[in-house]
Length: 310
Image (tube, rainbow, N blue to C red):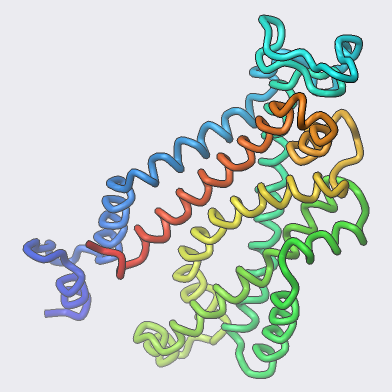
């Protein structure tokens, strides 16, 4: 019996036999998909995330008006904001803009900033994680000390500090959120790489004379990307909240034509007692979107974790 057949037989499900030569990774992937498919939370999270992405991408087709439109400002009085009507599905906001249009375009802004900032944080964290876990030695010590310093500062406070130094713009918000996410990805990748350094396949590659850099980049890194992708899904939930938080604090895009959920909450504060719907709808959008990414990410984590098998 060959080593490959032995590994395949060891990973087979109880009561099932796998044909000789079958790759064990395929069986694990199928088992993970089956666990994910049977998880109701995964379906709920996937539905919310899909709806959020569709609304954000198709915003010009869904929204009935332009986001900068304030032609109904004359209908706003100090004590009253028009509610839902045939012309305006959710009514107007305090600046005479269509509330439904603002929510739809706010989803696009949150999606763009959240995805770009997560990709930037993932890229920078991957570089630091490879340097730390792949090279080791004094490089690992230096990188981890920098990461520890970043982790000692709360993520939102770190993002606020970076955004305040860079300036008010969508780009600064992306950079600020990405910087706050870097240590999360760096430590996760480092731990994954360190756990593989003593694996049999790594020792076999070294015995064949492959360079350490090639082993890390071509073999160890691809085997470590699964947890990073799951973490990226979970981080997207935090990114959506942080986008709204930075906009709420006045650090978002200063252009009034750019719809942002956090800025809508700021506008609603003055009329919260008489018109609570102005804060209710953007708050619900933020909470539901973050919930969708969290449910999907947790379901992916449990499905890919062998210890979660039932």
